[in-house]
Length: 148
Image 1 (cartoon, rainbow, N blue to C red):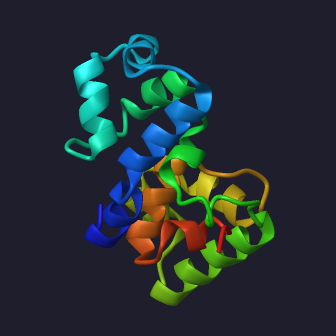
Image 2 (cartoon, rainbow, N blue to C red):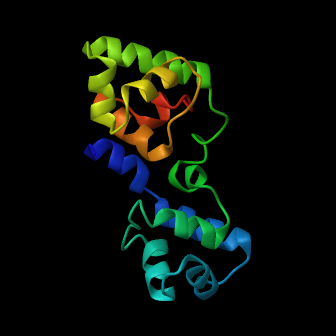
């Protein structure tokens, strides 16, 4: 993952975890129990001392009843998505670097048929695939997803 994309995801995640937990009205211990992590691990994530692995984020989200998108993205970015803009941006990015559907899929860890469906607006990639695709194209994931 490119450093720029990682910085967008990691920057402020502890604050967002803490804010979501407080909004849910639960303690660190309760949130940790619901997420299957210790209260200490939860506290370290809230303080920004550690960053939960992407594979563990769904457990953190379950502990505070929020979506991964809400937890990962800045509040001003996580508004309504423009799926038409996402499709158009995916097509233009792939065209700009001159790669095939297969090459784009390989770069994002997806199939060429998935890339085709996303570019046509028939389906949408998950957030982790969107991040890999944005990294492959060298653009911001929020922009590619149609949030900006």
